[in-house]
Length: 369
Image (cartoon, rainbow, N blue to C red; front, side, top):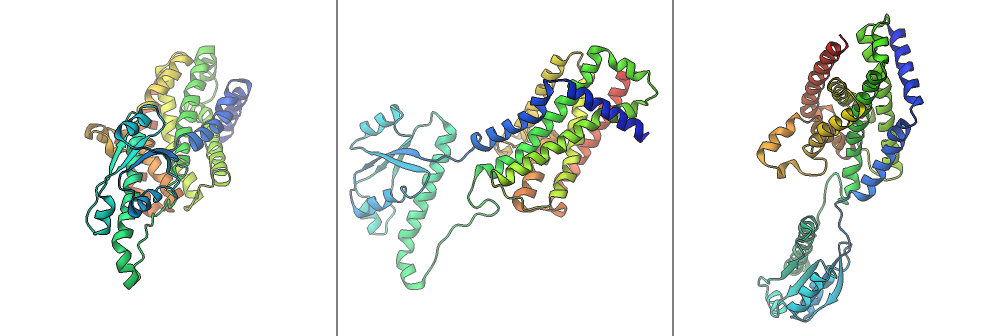
């Protein structure tokens, strides 16, 4: 039985090798996706241009403006003298934000009283506006803390510091690169499985395989085995480039990562099998793959926080295996989490894998029959 499965798998691998279109999809596309997501898909906003209208012109207001300069988030692009000039900078795209400091700012700060500052934000890009406002709030809170604690520090030596766990530098690449593995596996294994089987239907070789002494289980395993190998190969590529090129930390167990990836691959192969049973041509298989994958990716939390979604879509996201695998893989990469911590995600992922794969196998058997 094993010999027949390996023979079938070797035949499938040779079939993949003969198709010149598959090589860039299987091996070059993962590299392109890794580079694009590693460098392009980032939530790190840097060098945001701000215009400043300092009506106070005091040591306190200058110290507040200087608090923005050492950071990599902002560039003080221009000093203006009125609201009209500030709005003009926003309209012309020369600034993303305008910082308006009132005349009594210095007096209020020096007297230990609350001081108000106005920030005018270009909201045409809501993501940039929200993140930029959070940066300003953080800088303002830090400045306010220093002003309040300065007399106390002189007496008691209080040291006020902020420490972030798991991703201290708050780098997007540390968050995005592990997610690339989940994206690659569902794209490569699902689509290639569906296309490979549908292609056999199109050229008529699937009927020839059915009449051979191969059992249907042997035929199915043999056809899926090369895609399992390709999936693990792509995981290795992402790990190597993520660690040595993008300098992403892997704090957890790599063997555990591969073991849990096998559970996820079982799900993606099941999706590919299912798509092959509802598609008659390769074009149909491609469209069906994207139709199924896109909702899974959107509801997975890969780019958009699930907590920000409406309750209905939050509940719907529990049906996406990508959701669970993203938590697993980011937990292994960034937190060094083990199975004792990840089991609440592993159990539903395993259940989905068994259900999806079993249903797809039954449907595939009926299709062969």
